[in-house]
Image 1 (cartoon, helix red, strand yellow):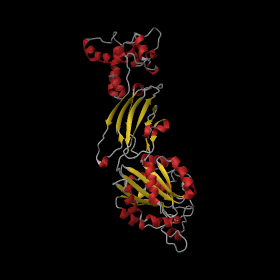
Image 2 (cartoon, helix red, strand yellow):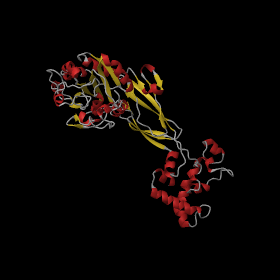
Image 3 (cartoon, rainbow, N blue to C red):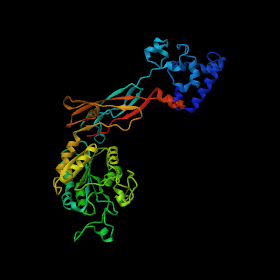
Image 4 (cartoon, rainbow, N blue to C red):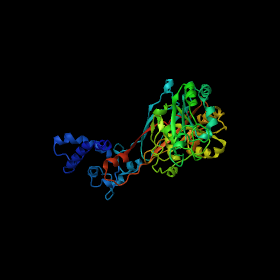
Length: 475
């Protein structure tokens, strides 16, 4: 009873049990002074007996728990401290503590969801989908995950394009991308959607010219360019390739002053504005097309912008409205948001900036880099190749674990390849229909420190519950 009250933090029940213990310790050897009290309290003593051989740290000394255990320490030798109750199972038996009085819980895991036959809209590539684990300090638990790359898995692809002046010829080739890409992707999946967004730069000096004339037309000569902007969501994800072509065909090049672009602002908004972009819970691809480098966290100071990017959605009428207020996001911040939203990035960049984006790829998991031709004429082949590269690699990830809990992976990949450690997180060259598995041992290593919080100490000392969700599908 007391144990249950502590674990579930039932303060009222906890206080009732403590009061009972105090009354017991002031009476005869079992604290029972009359039949009525015996009837109400004896069951508690029987329940407490199971705790007789559990060792509690010194924090319990002079507490009701310590007084309770006074009645059950007959196997201790004179002068031995109460902490001597904490020992190995066999040692406690040898010392005279009977097996039925030893508290020795063990961890276990239970499969909560393991669907195999799902509707097309609910298709999954991993089994099981949901587990519940009970972990004991120092005792690892392991469970097996299976991944099978599904055929005809749905894909959402968002094309994010740099519309600075140097990309004028590229825009012409992208204008027919929708229907052409739809046709090519139909060979991979029957459920494909495409969207489009564009970016230029923050709308403050020194990134753009803020003179009235340049704000109307930032280009020189007789070039008719649109006003500079940070990021626009032109078309949310749709199955209509012709609509993509129509809306992209209505876009115009803009301009800015410096060479790096504000693409990181745009990537952040695409990642966190799920409702406006229209992301589904399927394979999510972000194609980032540019012929320049990028600004990142800290560069905003040049324009007097010092507030860190808050990683939230700020789209009004599909336009990013806070570029003048928040700094560019850092690479680490982008990694976090892309990972949280399970977005795989394809950097389609010109050959000149290949080395820069290769280094960026190494910092962003589940990303790929392709070389964009001078006028983006090869963009479809680039996207197909990058998708095949990404989809043939399975990566298992876990969210932040509770303190004291560690997780390791051991993968059984294609052609009998077995990997452990960091390499055990992934398998490569996975084709449609291939099945791979991973065994993941979890270990709970809870250290109990001196504390007056008996309920929290009890909770940590006895067990730790961990609801472990299956890793996100990475088709």
